[in-house]
Length: 371
Image (cartoon, rainbow, N blue to C red; front, side):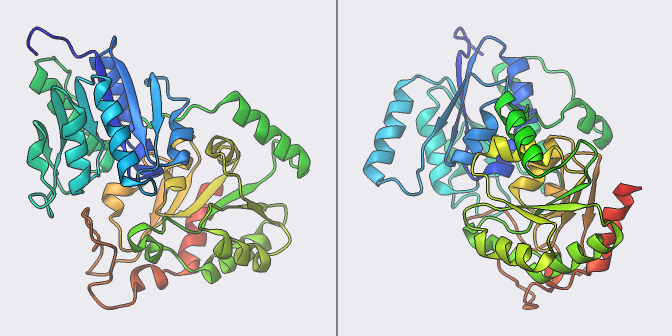
């Protein structure tokens, strides 16, 4: 470690909401390693800043929209960050992009920590970081982040007790961390009163879309399948209500499902993610594509039925014991890997992996949780 202790740390959680919440077990470990350090996080999305704002392991949350800001303003923002004197800069997994590695190198005055990726690693200049760990390729994203923190501890000469290797122990000892705010709880209470729900109301939560970046909407189950599932659950559970959570890019898809799903389907277009998560926490089961809201539901302890197609369920399944992954078993699955390239269907099956996922299989998984 040398003579100077690490007093200021910044973590870059740039890609999205799900990736940020999957870093929270590593963040708790980082706090254990550096209990006196000032730990900040930088995000690019308001939603990510919302869900990290209540995290007790953070001292500060920065938000800046690098995607849409003028380049000169982005450079000024990075220069101001550099002037804050962060001893250690960490790029959360996955962040396999050229610009991410150079930002990490620029901000970390002494140490810059990141992964070496199996695909396009040299092209994306992983070597500018001076603390690295190679992507294992078969581990969950939470585990990859924990490996990076362990590499930091080893590199700076701190002792870190061995993490357990059994998945069940990791789930118990390194949970996702997403405390609900008092404001969020009050919002959920008011929402329940306005809709006539009681504490015992049977609520199913849905997220039927995903990020539009890198063609990620192609990993989504069709809106007609979601309508069919809601109608089947309505028939067997006449007292149930269905909350369809919708983000800024989800509107057309969500409104179609609300229109055709029946009179007990409610559209939730809450832009404050802290409020939305408080509503998620009241659901009995959450049914979702592979998305950020899938991980938020897992973080607040809601059983999750997760629908997977092209993306890797082994790396991205909900980090909770209360989940079921519903998927097909095609030989080409999964086909998406972490790089700058968008999602595509190399088997030329028009994403049959998710498109042809049977409604009956998803319904069966939901009913198992209700038992």
